[in-house]
Length: 187
Image (cartoon, rainbow, N blue to C red; front, side, top):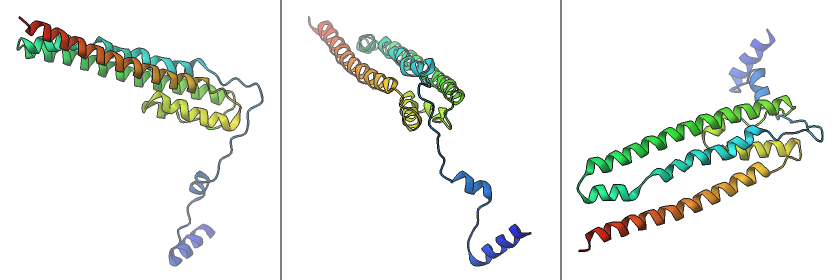
């Protein structure tokens, strides 16, 4: 009865009083600290750090020279076939990477809950990128325990290393393909 009267009074004055569940949803949430020595390092976080780079290495299967050679002899079908095959491999490895990142993040978050972490970082963010989950996990864990930043540091180092190697590979691959094409033009 009182709830109905409050809603009527609120409606007359233009105020909207949210139901109790909505008030609780927006209330500040505390995360109690974990006991010292609680292990929050899991195999799942390390798999999130490493596995995407194994699958991302499928980019190195792309052969620029093969595509340019096919285009040089006016074989667009062969060139498009190689590009299409490689795009399918990349799409497949991307989907596998996302699925594995979600699985590993789900398992990691579940493990963190079992050791006492209240509201660990949402595992669904791993669908954006594994490093998004790693960063969010680190932020949450820093609030409840002096967690090691090793997974985050290794993840950042792997990003820098992989993109450096990829850049060098791309430059060498294109230069090699163009040199091979130039050699086939010369009499």
